[in-house]
Image 1: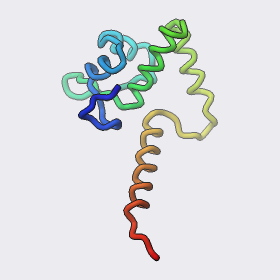
Image 2: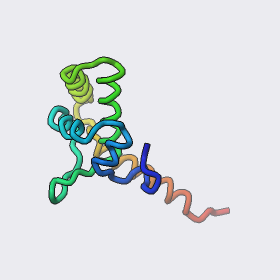
Image 3: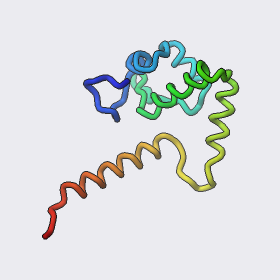
Length: 118
């Protein structure tokens, strides 16, 4: 669950992601070393900022490991296979998805605010 005082698209600290997902901070840092897809932004002092896509990936990894019984290696293989299953030349990654979401949101906002002609 997202913090009530932040937008759904806001970046989250490691503490907020830990609290929202139920995954301990040290486990999140460990997962960053095991899953190349999980790459939060790091600012001065190694402070981590997780994108909404990163938090969703953390939830997915946790489900695969705890609920579905995958091993770390099994989840690594599954995520790697999903990444290689994309057609050649197709946009990939959470950043592209985030940009597409932003574009769609802006397009809807512009359409809603455009003067209506009768």
